[in-house]
Length: 493
Image (tube, rainbow, N blue to C red; front, side):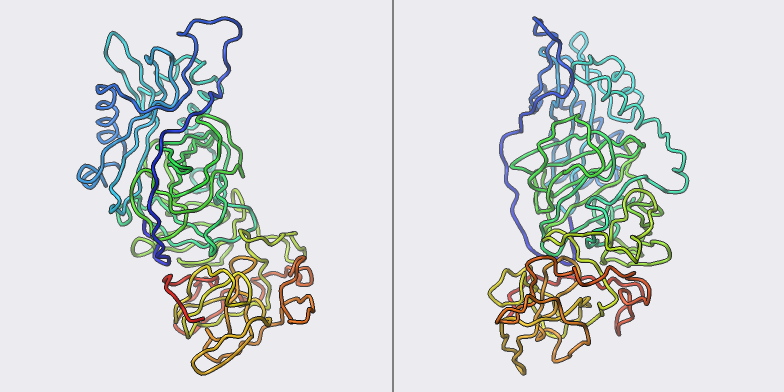
């Protein structure tokens, strides 16, 4: 999946399917094999079922036709049994579209229920009338009563404020923390409907969390990556791709808002491609790709742009164009934190630093590396190219950097993650008037405070004087000032 601001390419790894324990209640005491559900995910070997599941997937899944031409040309399908009885006459399974490693599309997966009667398979994809019928009949030791209720409620579309576009869902990371987003697009990139969003952090290590309650299902799970689908209680289904270090939760288990799903990455277990670590999120409703345009997620209402990977997110009149920096305000249209109260964010590598009125905007004039600490020997997250806008929080002193026309040991802490620094050299001799960072007053005048560097920096309202969305020559109004990583190329600095 395209991520326009990053260019790291990591190859996909493949391994055997993942084994898991059934979350449904097991019968107590002695039982015959026919009463015990097989709970190991296995690739379906029955050719008739594989053919039926694949044909149903392409023929009946709304939106599949938008990418079916490419799918037929460069991919096949993986049909898996997630749960079954011993005789394999009842199966809760998934059919996944597998892609080549040159495809820019994102694989799609569909949950199904199948029953074999007199040697013939009957199958229903999630959301269909056939699925509803089979859902009522499948034994509860395969699909528990509670899991059946979740499927049924999700298909009933019972959400009173659906007409307002309120999904009741958060953004897929920690509340009151900011990540970058890179625009609205289709699951095939340029294909419509635009039902997809890409999110990432500058360090490439953010934890993806469930945006709402529901049940979890995983397809083509390999080497800690997979295609994760959440069937929510509110009628929406969301899916996630490219994650690594997936949760150990097994298929059908309940999840709550904030449940850990995985870590952003470059995972490609079902094929496709990526240009950098991120999570690809899709919105689905009644088995159809559902347009993001007009939807409310994490307190932001999203609107399409003129083309894919563009768009605007609006919260209480504040507009952030893609690519940009979004704070997750949680489910529904929650207000930003009280400007007079420090929300108690404990900065960490995967968390966003509190934004203050001291932050200003600057343009990168010389390519410069973004580093974990103010020293050229510290870890580099990547390079900001000339012309990018960056938000500066404060300055400090660290290792000396030799530029073409300047030598400096001044460094700037930038917005986006709690510990991201750039050398003053990257600003081309400019010296923005930002405050000094908190310091531990050691002999090297190192600006890093081993406690909380923001303890003496009140969490003021970042929108009071519009400093966070200030105007910069060459930037359109509303452009996020969060760090926008450029192409990952070697840099002198």
